[in-house]
Length: 137
Image (cartoon, rainbow, N blue to C red; front, side):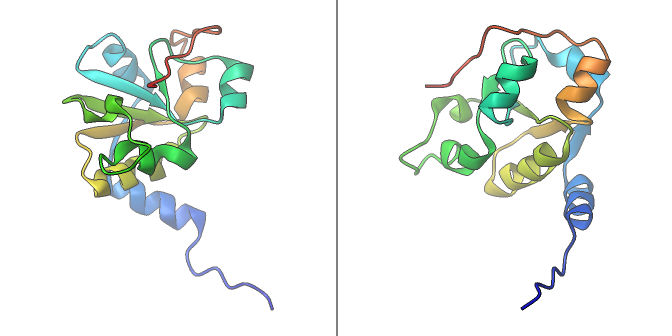
């Protein structure tokens, strides 16, 4: 049986972008050292190892995000219980748009994501750390 996909990934992304705050790279760069913000890197660990990370960012793999955010989950991480703005990013901005939408729907606030993701961050000359990772454990 052939699958019939009724909503395309592009439609999902458009819907997410209509609901969430999207920061330009320049806006995000201006918030990097703001102690009221937490940068959340949802990329796969292999992506971080290959291309580095934004300094001070917290790695929260996309597959665990809902569980780490929810305080009733046995996997909850305290980093998500702070009164801060959460700025999500992935490699290109697609996963982070969907993740930001989901976190907003769960009640995490305020949240935003970086337009163009880590690739745009690199292209704009954003700070990069090749060796360090902040793990919320």
